[in-house]
Image: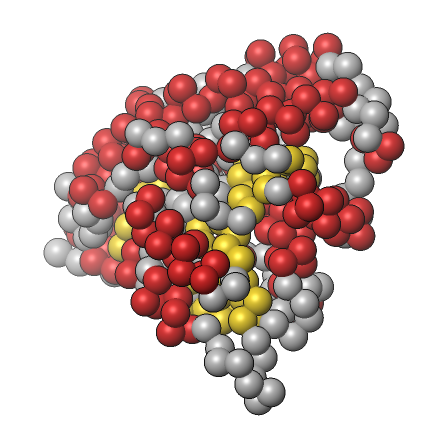
Amino acid sequence: MYDSKGMDGKGDAVVDLRSDTVTRPTPAMRRAMAEAEVGDDVYGEDPTINRLQSHAAEIFGREAALFVPSGSMGNLVAIKAWTQPGMEVICEQRAHVNQYELASMSAIAGCFPRAVFAHEGILTWPVVESLIRAKSPNYSQTGLVTIENTHNMAGGTLYATQVVEEICDRAHEAKLRVHMDGARIFNASVALGKSVRELTRKCDSVMFCLSKGLGAPVGSMLVGSKEFIEKAHINRKMLGGGMRQAGVLAAAGLVALEESPKALHRDHENARYLAEGLAKIPGISVDPKKVVTNIVIFDVRGTEKTATEICSELGKKDVLCGATDKYLVRMVTHYDVDRAGIDRAIAELSEICSTVAKTHA
């Protein structure tokens, strides 16, 4: 559990709910990293990297996999592999590829996001179909469909398997590829009780993160066909993603793949518990029933403060979280925050809101 002292170097431990990216490697990961057998991965000679890639491909039922430094690079590498400059990429408006990757699909891949707002962040085939460009010399052409599961900025929402498969089947009929940003696909797997292979089997490529809820310190994976991974490997090199003795990182990833999914259900339980506590605070609006994974996004406009102001005041009490909009705050549960930490976060926010209420009484 997170045991660092408060920001002033003393007092209670920090409760860091900014993201599941703040997780620290477990003792088992650290041991594996220290003992990792390594080689030069640019030459394809790092045995631990090779083992991680083979294992990831096996778990997802794919021909091959590629280790990349980050999820953002993984998504960009995939977009470049499936498209040509001047094409459009269909995505949900709040998708990570659209909002949080520095417009890299445009700046580097030469593509334009064809974004649309979808209820709870979940695209459906009728929505996707309406965004596909007609074959015409007057329009940029649709190059790729992307979906995000779980959907981060929609509050960790999930795609039903049949929705994903309808999108894939119909997109393939239209001769389009489908890439899944599955940064938190293992959270989706645990919440839905289905394997990641089953959830992603019809997608042409999948990116997933080792460094979020799975807890590895660095890295993400791309999985797909052998031909796709060969193209992705070239794109990774072009972007400066070639690494040398990276087996020390892959070793942690192997532990993360084997051990961490078993504990994700606790993160989901803590998120629901957090949402239930927040819902009881005057001025806070959140529906706990909609919290199905490890992300809680709640509205604070009833407090007469902005999300940034709320986050700042919580930060002074060593409870860390982030604003996603003027009145929306995001908290993300993970294995470095236990139930006591969740209780502290609820209590501190309750005190802040109580103070506001008294001031306006």
